[in-house]
Image: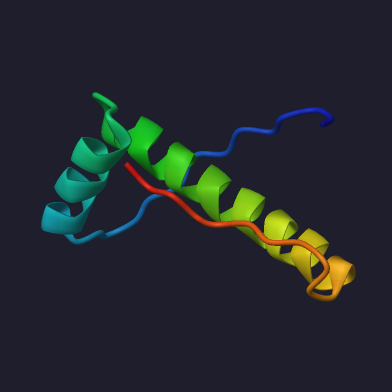
Length: 65
């Protein structure tokens, strides 16, 4: 994918959402939960673009655990 550039960031986040995200994603750290959530958003955007290119000629169901 290319070179990963890590940057230090400071955010104020809703702790209950962060705790829920950790649980749903099955991770131990808050940083990992945020990283996984960002990856999911980026991956889903790429999937949506691919589906739009098929113009309805395919069928995919989203299944979440």
